[in-house]
Amino acid sequence: MVALKWSQLVVSLSGGILDEEALLPAPQNISILSTNMKHFLTWSPVTVPGETVRYSVEFQGEYERDYANEIWIPISECSLIIVTQCNVTEDISATVPYNLRVRANLGSRGSKWSTLKVLFNRITTFLTPPVMEVSADGYHLLVKLEDLGPAFQFHIFYWRKGQERHVGPSGPPISSVVHLDTIEAGAEYCVKAQTYVEAINRSSNFSQTQCVHGSIWMTTALVSFVGFVVGVLALPFLAWKMSQIFQYSCCPVVVLPDTLVISLSSLLFLGSLTQNHLFKPLPMDMGGQHRAPALEMLACFAFLSGALS
Image 1 (cartoon, helix red, strand yellow):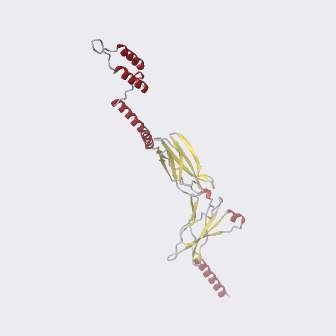
Image 2: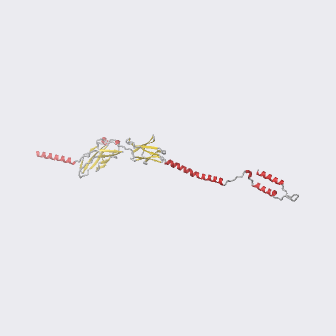
């Protein structure tokens, strides 16, 4: 009987030693890194010389913990993986406390579960200021923001030398470029922005302020264009005016006064009168000499004076 008891004790002790040897070391330093609503569970690797250790991850939300007998849900994307991190963004879909755990696997051997020391809530995610690029395109103030996804909006502040204005929350825009305002040429405008997530009602810190000057060359180009159009439109008129001045200077047109203008009927009458009176033969005097018809000449000159007047 004593020998049998000793044999049973040896067997139980050896079985216990074998069970302890069958267990892998549990993963250590379990933590979750969350930035801009992207959540990653990380841990330290379990090292077995000459072997590849795999890991499996499970999560437990508020519903599973309080209303479903504290069940754990495996994450299919993080089952028997060889890396030491797991993207749990899709599984943490509500703003409630979550618990996560991970264990190591090597063939039929496994480790104990390692669990987060503190429950995780996505409201604690770290929001970074948006990466932006500010530019002045002519008279337009533009800002280009990085695309963080459909859950993100932006508060944008911009001002001109002490005149601060606020636009926001804006987004997410169809294009990544937002037109803020029409600016004045040569004026300096400054812009800063912060990230905002409505699902958790939180905003990031502000980005570094970026300032730009309105383009002066646009004003110069506009003035030049207006001058060119005016010149093109005025050129025909100036050419016509110069031709008129040249014509009157070199080849003036003499306009007769109304008193010197004789109508056609008057010319015909004068022609007939001249033919009948001025060019008929002069009468002979007693000595055989021609004498001037004084009366006819006076009458003709009187008539011409009246016609010209």
